Image (cartoon, rainbow, N blue to C red):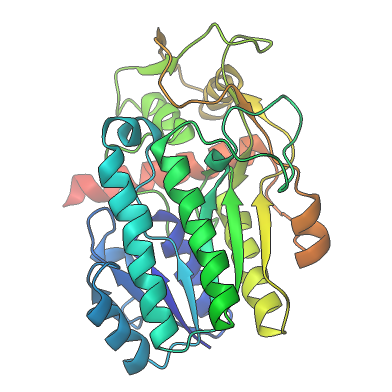
Length: 330
């Protein structure tokens, strides 16, 4: 199967490329390299450098490479940044996704997997969220993804396309074989930031709010290992290839950890101090958000293998150490 992976030079998309190759498929990466890295794309994988909003280039790529399916990762994804730059997020995440979908329709693509987010739910309760929970995003990031979900649903109904929408919870970790991981220099992912602080790459880190109505006052999130997330994408493709119906599914483990618990786990796994300073709350941050993963387990047969916070931290620690050594040699 020939699969176009938008954002395939980035963190999650790069792991998808590896999984497709491992399974004997043929990924084609489409990335503008604004946050992705050319060196992270395997030499035997075609890389088209371009923007998903470039309709003609996308259409040409779909036809030239006889694409069978699209897995769409390319997006901006920093919640506070989206609050400061809503128009940039609606352009990048919604308007350009509309262009990608138009090219997909013109090329006759019938299989589409979309990288969405738990941010579509907004300020959730302390109970795990099922897919039919009300959608009330708190940030332009969440809203931009929700609008793309709506477009995808309507386009699929009009043109015979089938899709799976995967609503990610908090993604972390690295490929256990250390072939790929999070490379963005100024990433805001909590576990990456805490690990970098433990390694001395940052003098300290900030905890954005310690007065939330949670047991220790810090926000609670459902952290999913990137390898388990990618296995969900592979299951989604298999489901659609077998003629399965369109689905919306959560990607999370069904339990959460507070910011303080994550930082303490990083201290314990690394054996090093992590200086954490309390900072004001950030706009757009939900208090608690945890997945109900019943549907993805029952409908796609998904079984996570790395549902263990210390394992996620340990893989992140190994990757960050390798990445630091690589950068020092350059």
